[in-house]
Length: 226
Image 1 (spheres, rainbow, N blue to C red):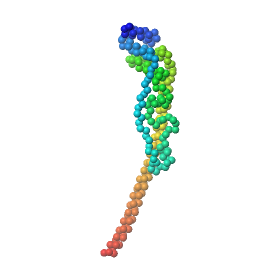
Image 2: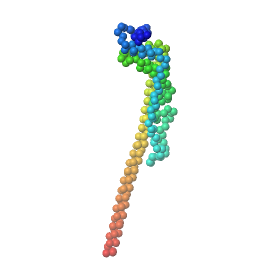
Image 3: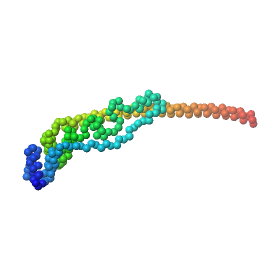
């Protein structure tokens, strides 16, 4: 069977499904686009490759030594940054790792990614409404549960938003703790500077007293020995 006859057969199938209306002006480009749409119906499963894990940046681990002038209890206040729950918000996680945390699939015909794979088979030159109609017809003809696919996408967005909020909250907590430590260290620096100034003043006072007494004795010695 020639390519044109194959294309006409594809058009007949979609016309019976009421996805399109065939006209005499169909071009070879339109036939190829619609053949791609039908080939998507014949595919038994679609798999989205899992995201490749990106190298995680180094985690900031402060030196577990007691800072100058801070007691051990205060040190724990500043440096105790381990989360109380089992969920990790202390390092970067790519999408694949996040879905593992959420106990969600990264691929499969029962996920929102099935719809994404259908979308990718249709040319972008087709009107959005026509593409949407074709995809809905394909899903129905393939026996997939559209509501389940839609809910999977909604659930993923909800889980990602919740994790993002927890991550932001954890960041604010860590920043607040470090700011408290900075304030404490700045107070200590000010105290040390004041101690330095006091010592310099003490030194100056002591030096002048000794110099005055030494000069006094020198005058006496010079008088008596000359």
